[in-house]
Length: 393
Image (cartoon, rainbow, N blue to C red):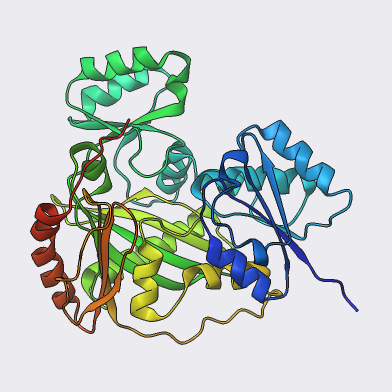
C-alpha cells in the first residue's frame, strides 16, 4: 500500500488556509513552514500535521538548511509557496532538492517586474515602455525619448507597493541617487493612464482552464498613494474587453511557461489607443477578497481548485461546473471598531465582512450593469459612513 504523500506549504502571513484544508481533505499530510512572528495566527492546526517556523523566510540559507534537515526524516513530495513573497522561496528549495514544480527561472517571471517585462516584450506582448536602472546613459535616453510621467518601480515589490510617479528627470535622478547600491533593483516605466483590470486564472497542463476578468475601481497605484476605497467588479462575458483580456492572458501564460497552478495578472486599457497592456503577473491567488468575489458569483473556490491542480495525479484534474453570475466587492478600513452595514440590504448583497475596523460587502447578480450601479451608489456612502485612510509607510 502506497504511503500518504506530504506537501510542505511555505507562507509568511496568515494566508491560504483553504489550500491547507483542501490538501488535508484530499488525503495528504500537510506541513506548514512560516515565520516565528506568525506562529500565533489562526492556522487550522487540527488540519496541519506539522508546523515549523524560521526567524526570516528570506534568509535563503537558513530556510534551505531547515527544509533539508527535516527531509532526513520526512519525504516532501510537493513544496508550494502560497503567497506573493513565498513563490521564489519555494522555487529555490525545489531547485535545490530537485522536487518537481516551478523552478527559479519560471518563478522569476512571476516575481521580478523587469524579467516579466523583458520576456513579454520578447514575445510581442504589449507593455508600457520601460528601462532598467542599471546603465545611466540608458536611463537618460529613455527619459529623453519617452514623455513623462513615469513610474519608478521596485522589481520585486507586490502590487503598487513603493511605486513612485514622477514628472521631471531631476526627480528621477534624485531618487536614483538615494537608492545607492539598490538602484539595480528598480526599473523606470512610462505611466499609462487608463482602467486597470485583473484576470484570475487556473492553469492545468499549460492551458488556462478558468479565467475571471474583472476591473478595479480606483487603480491600486492611486489607491495606495492618494487614498480611496477598494472596489472590483467582473466584466461582461463575451464583451470586446473580456475577449481581449482572455487573449492577452493566454499569451502571458504561454510566454512565461506556466504549466500548472494559479495566476493573478493585471492589465491596463490605455485610454489613448484603447489597447490592453500587460502590467504584472503573479503565480498566486489574488488578495483583497478577490477569491471571495469569484466564489460568491461562480461557486468556484480558487484555493481548492489550485490545490487539486497541484496535488492530483497528472491528467486527473477536471474543472467542475460553475455558476456564471457576476460579482463585485467594496472594502475599506473603517473608523469604527464594529462598523454597522445593516442599511446596505439590497438583495444582491451576498456576503458582509465582519472584522474589526473593516467594512466590506460582496455583491452578486445575473446582470453586470446592476453590480456597477450598486458600487457607484455604495462608494460615496462608504466614504461618509466608514472610510479611514492610513497612508503607506
